[in-house]
Length: 246
Image (cartoon, rainbow, N blue to C red; front, side):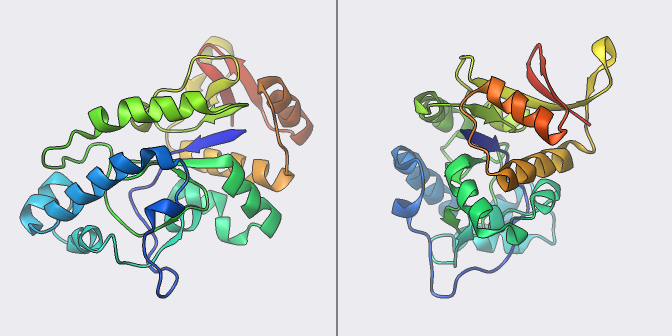
């Protein structure tokens, strides 16, 4: 089972003292060439504060984000689920997970990233700033990641659950097969069912936390639906995959 999560714009500060990025320590090593190209372009852009601020769509008070990219190879690292911040990751609350659930996050979570393509939940990464819409000199992120990520996802076996945002899902398409499904957070019933906006990220974080805490290893969509019924989670099939009802 592999659960795909979106990243977050914001990252937590800090890291393990004396540590730095080791591309060889990251999951999905077949993405290393694309990671090297992206990091090289990020660091080159970060030499020009004005150009980087515009390309990354930063405000006048966010110069520290450019500095993060300039030091991306030497700054300390944290596990990805601890590095990412924001509503989804606040709801996931990785720091409070017991050791068994964190181990499950290492096995069963993957986080989309404009800089790294796809990361394992416990992969050690530095703080950085790059989004799917960022413009890097001489490098189109959509073109760079589309085929490599699609190949990586197609090679995964077992249940594949996609909780990524639409923009990050476009960077690497989910394979079309019965055990690969997009999960949408929705409300309502029947034809009145609609996707949620404001509570979307919180619901995803809470769902993934519950999944990790349960210790469930689910081989297919039917076993996921059985698990959800047993946990009192409202998860139903829909025309687009699975709807998480809140």
